[in-house]
Image 1 (cartoon, rainbow, N blue to C red):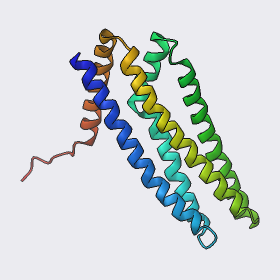
Image 2: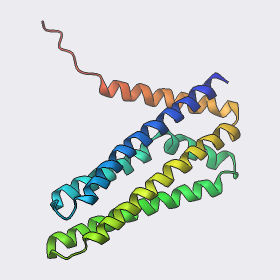
Image 3: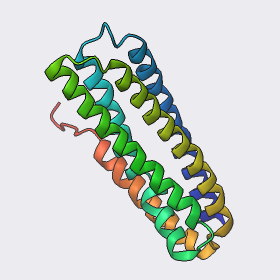
Length: 177
């Protein structure tokens, strides 16, 4: 029971961190959209890079790496939600690619597609937001349907990943003083 509690808390903390990160990125994007006509392509490229990094981060989170595979293996109750999350992820990636292509077109030809770029960026943000909301539903579903013995293995994986992440962040100390 303790491992299930640890795992659920870890997932919820990760979800809050992802939502906070996304909210920060979204604020920058909405500000960028308002000022896009005066901003240069480099500013837009930076926004796209932040969204792309966030999308990559989403695929490295515990919910993606451990919970989704566990749910696929253990129950069909989550299939519709998992399919929806997969579609939202694909939509986000497609929209990011579309914005990047439109940006390249804009930079090459000076075409007046700024409004189209803005709309696509807003759609991309909306897709990410829906995905994060649905993942919260997924965590609640996982809490309900994953058996206690499976949570032990999941918690073990979480602890291993957390330890690995900490080891990667530890600074190298010089013993010479």
